[in-house]
Length: 376
Image (cartoon, rainbow, N blue to C red; front, side):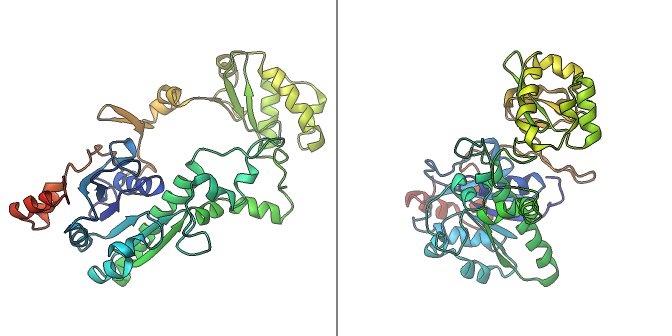
């Protein structure tokens, strides 16, 4: 593997959502990630999807004889561990931070949860929509006259969770390279989303944001920042916040109504939104693209996932790659000298025997583990 994390070894305890996303990011950048999959995965993770790319997979029944010993042997030879269980589960399995750091004092022990390792909600079940709810972020999303609209789990699980854990692990690895000491990373989606919302809390503090939905510049309240329906039922987005870009939009669209000149008159925003809706409904999306695309009007067509794959800008930048017949986003960010690589997508347990042999297990040992139901 290429990448800036070449030589870094990571052990991932299989899960769903932010943990696998964090592991994908590290694997994309060259880390050797070993995924401990469940022998009978069911709903809670099992590999085989594009987010599982770039790993090796060992499948174990953790509750069967010898499984914990295998994991602890793996722990001794890795730089970081990723786990996404409820607080206390790894401890009950005999794989908690104290045990693992005793085996490997330089280990960066990454813990991924929704609520965090502490707090009154730490033991409660939850999902992305719940974690967003207590940060203030979800309340700000959606239409003014309806309940808040949950975004895709890009914001919580992946942005506030997986990416923050990856950042924390890399920070921990950097510090360990100087101190020689490992540590525990407590990454919680609620904390990460709150951090992502820092700018909004700042705007509230300075009186530049209201908690009323569709009343602010970036939440659909402004007529010049949002999405509109075209005559063919498809959509476009505009976002010319700066006056010079706003003037460019008005000029290209031949909008001469003097009401549009007063860009920041919030009392006029609802009326101007209705006027813009009629204007954009007068042409197809492709016609608007011909007129506005590539200009300083801050315009883009709203594409679905399938359309995004063939969009010329994405094609030229090679924003998507194909692995094992599946097309998915390319590794980011892009490094000039040590770029990331999207690795192969492993089958669950495909590396079990080879990893056990590398740990020193004999053929007889492997036979016994199989007979005990520890491995498949």
